[in-house]
Image (tube, rainbow, N blue to C red):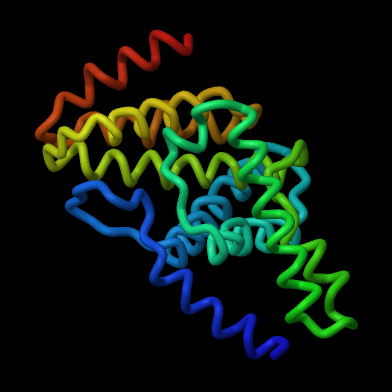
Length: 210
């Protein structure tokens, strides 16, 4: 069915709910997540560029917009499950890669296939664009968990999500972005009025990552 099938499959991303099976005050779908990740990455890439980094903007946008398309095939896997072991994470990545490869070969016209193989490959790599993708992806996870904890959702999974996201963000080798997040964004977030004591929880994580 070609490009038509690819375009119609994008609708499926709107129906895939993130962190399925848990009570949430706010539902988030994969399509909206990808758009937000692109926005976060655009801001922090601008910040890195202002601090002397050379950004490949075409690569950045392609990585962020496409990074979760493979969830069309396997859905959203909960964060604690994904990170249960390196072996499991590698297996899930392998399944996504093979299903994406089959989709491109079956559905994308041959002359466009090399482009799609490049755009749809794993975007989180050692390039600054790959690191910005990972930063932005974890930032959205941080905000999703933050929104639930702020409203008093005591589900431990959101505490775990918050810890994983915050810890990863602080460890990424993006000095300008991490510093801005830590001194500005995180400062504003933990001073909001929340139902759960996020100030103490955040300080514990900061102490652990210091």
